[in-house]
Length: 137
Image 1 (cartoon, rainbow, N blue to C red):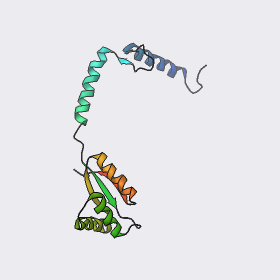
Image 2 (cartoon, one colour):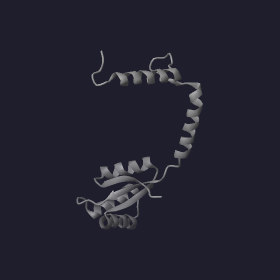
Image 3 (tube, rainbow, N blue to C red):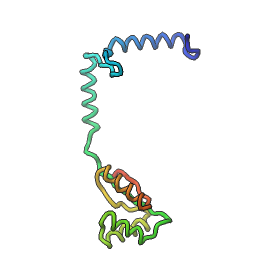
Image 4 (cartoon, rainbow, N blue to C red):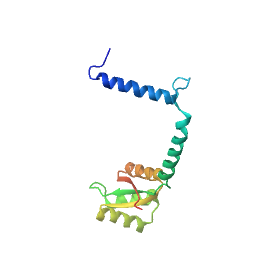
């Protein structure tokens, strides 16, 4: 039973490709396992993988939690949240609140992504609009 949209030339080409792949792959006996790459191909693949990994791996760039201005929360409430959650002094919390109010946003924390995600989630629980952004280099 053929597929009406698949021409004979395409089907023959696909069979040829499948045979080439089968020639270079050794399928393991265990069901559900991944194919094992032929030893001749494995050496070049490992070198490529290591080279790619080395070039793409860099120390995790710092992330930041950004709180955005919204038309809902009072400035006194935002100051309260910054003091109670982050432990900022009254003057620092007010400075950040005014930055949110006047500039539309303020960076309230910097650090690893996971920690910034926790801070952002906490800001959401307080009813503030916040996002996690990659810190500019």
